[in-house]
Image 1 (cartoon, rainbow, N blue to C red):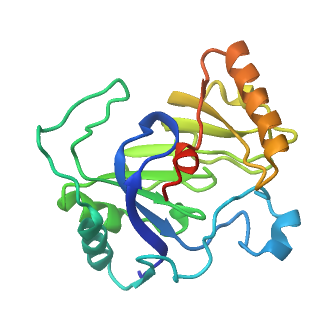
Image 2 (cartoon, one colour):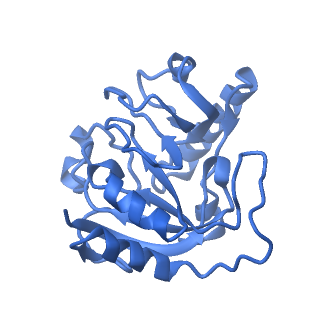
Length: 227
């Protein structure tokens, strides 16, 4: 199997339970909920997506014909130094271990057990950020599911549930029975409409106040201006 990658970069995780952790982000091309083309946004199952996942022309992007080649490329982006061994925090994070986050689009259209094993041989901890409509392959170390309204959620277990809020016709409390240790509400980015984005943030704050099992997640990478 070959892998089509939009971009690879070394940065800090900006959202959710592992906010602030150093990570290599590998963004795959393609998604099963939106084509990525603006002319299709209005009819997409995920019309609020804020990501460019079309093509392989991003920084570090390309087509990789083996898992080993992609794994070695990802490893070359990791520049962190292990100066004190693994350190556990309250999210169970081994903060000194090399860490890769697969995202998209929808990463589970491409991520497979062969690539996961190739990265783990290189001592990487492997994470995904998925819409949950496809099952995760064995071996993923950290699963973050962000379900979308009107879609069939297949991946109902993991480490982190992150709901973009609000979504019409979608009540996050219907997910309360799912087995996730961390539950987050994240305000929908209204793509340049600051007033509407503030309304969504206020709604998220109110939701978390009313439902203390859920925590607020912000896109801190956008606030900090880092990729």
